[in-house]
Length: 187
Image (cartoon, rainbow, N blue to C red):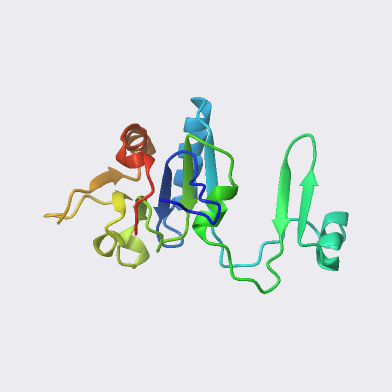
């Protein structure tokens, strides 16, 4: 599946991590990224936000140049670099376009983009008072929850113990080793 205008698909598998606000997505992601990175795996993360993103104070040179009208500003140091791209009224780039900008990795985890046609891990806490997403999303491959699996799950779905993140990490390692985990799901 070609994911960009240039026809470049992301290198490596992509897994969405979805769930309602407050469910523990970021905490679980932090655990999984830390462990996988410690194993020597290269992991990319895309974090979607519905809010404006401010990466530097307005008085800094890079912010001043961006506010002056630069389309992109790269901030570079011996430790990291960041590119800020101003949309200036253009549509928000698609997940596929964002994936194409990333360097190759053993895994790209995507927090957000609930609607994307990619394999997903749902983080579910019933005590938040929100309904689970997995019954209405065939792309959810696993659910990490702090409750036991409901009786009679209608489809093949891994049910993982959110309170034991090591079990989620074991599932993720197995998922990475499968051919199905290495491809974007087609719409």
